[in-house]
Length: 209
Ligand code: GTP
Ligand code: MG
Image (cartoon, rainbow, N blue to C red; front, side):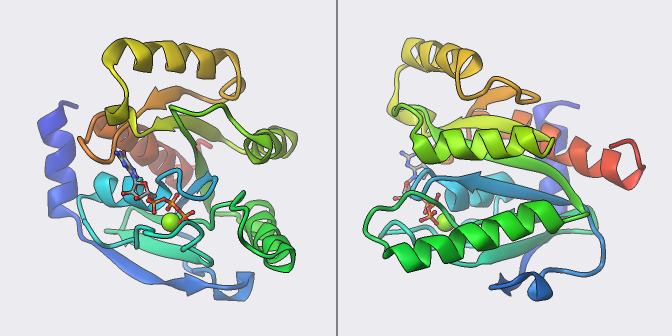
């Protein structure tokens, strides 16, 4: 499918915010496949989700890191839910709140039957941190399907993007289904990401994965 067809599909498909969950009891119950956005605070999860659906302003983008404290669910037509998870690793958040987030993220990832794919984001400009290493280990340990996306590609030159992508492939992205780069700002990488997200949802619905 070409770029035009992919975005054509999204334009015709309504994405809507369905709600925020503070605990598993509040997660959607209809069994539609889900794709989760994970990564450290400020990496660009909400921005990428907005850019992917073309629905700007749908997921709240942080002026201050650590904004997304709940699991926010967005429904894309009758195809899937996108789940915007709280970011980890924001230093100014009290420890007690940190462990609350960890519990929420962990209970989501381990208890979520409709989970079709995890989209793990890292900032292309920075070395992966301890939280990133922990998330990768967790995804591998529990055999969860995941892809790695290097974000904010617009902040680097083309050669530097290629260099960083190679580093991701050999490092934090080892074990991912695929490693890609993207920019919520320019839309770069969005068609590839949407193809992967959509396919994961379709495979789940057909019982392939
Ligand atoms: P939390 O909800 O706190 O975990 O953050 P988040 O991962 O959802 O990040 P968010 O989307 O709120 O973006 C954080 C900051 O990075 C905002 O100032 C965004 O405008 C900026 N940003 C996000 N994506 C991009 C991108 O692709 N390019 C550029 N230049 N800036 C970006
Ligand atoms: Mg966010």
